[in-house]
Length: 199
Image (cartoon, rainbow, N blue to C red; front, top):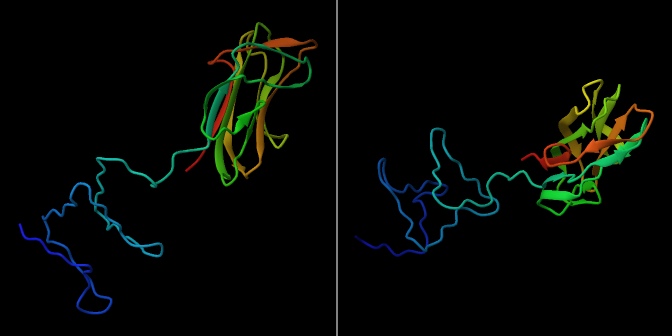
């Protein structure tokens, strides 16, 4: 094996091209060595039909759908009959940016964009003529799904895409048409709220 020691490879002509190897060749970077391609204003083009194979750790590529959060209520909650009640979620499953607090998700600084938001609430042994779950953005209705006469333990699930800016807040409200207070079921599979930023 021959060793070529140089500080710079440049084409013979200005703005020319330097080609490494021929078809079928393999060019290997020695273990422990680093390779920097281009600079802040460079463009690196991967031709059509080429394949990038990753057998290691890739960082800085694409995105990871954060911020993301998923919370649930570990126990049931009493809600006002005939009115709106803010739903309480006391258990976090994931909260990547520590952005969920006091039953509200707040979009972190620099993390505005499109978010997928969802929420689910179940009745507990009541069958209101009307009930709905609502996700509010900055205390205004954003996503709502309504049901009626769905059974004593029926649930309602709402989800959708929203445009959000840093500092926007999201929380969940429940409405029922009962003439008296009632209970909504708690549990990880029955009363939950979550969302994540799209890449």
